[in-house]
Image (cartoon, rainbow, N blue to C red; front, side, top):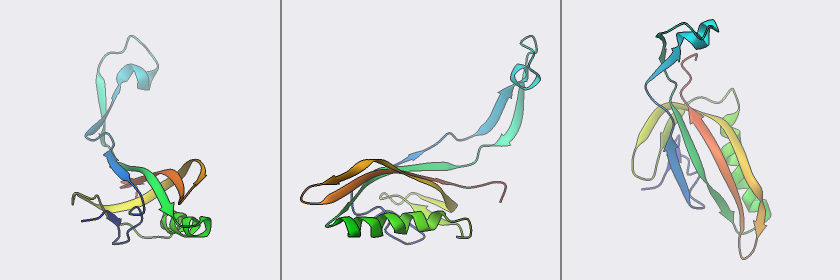
Amino acid sequence: MGSSFKGFDLFGSGAHRFVVGKQGRRLLSLATVSGLVTDSGTLEFGDRETRVEVRGGLVAASESALWVLRDAIVAQGVSTVDSGVLEDQYGHQWSTMKLLSFEPQGAVVHGRTVSLGYVAWFGVLLSG
């Protein structure tokens, strides 16, 4: 079973891992909100938005093929693109996810293959 976003194999060209961000309620100390260190207590600001980091490397036979892989991921980050199901290689699924950001890590590495490290952040936006 491979990982995917909206059924597209965006990460399968190289090794990658999924890391789920903080979950639960968003809590802030009253002192942080008021700016007065003498205020005690905690305020609840609802649920945290779900975030999943995908960290890995794209691997292709040529630099132009590498750009095709990169562009396929980046195209999912356009604001007009609908949300979808993000699935890791173990079958864990997160629904209504959007690609929030894609960040290359380092330079393109040339060898027998061409590769590029990346971090992609997906999330469920409670604001819509």
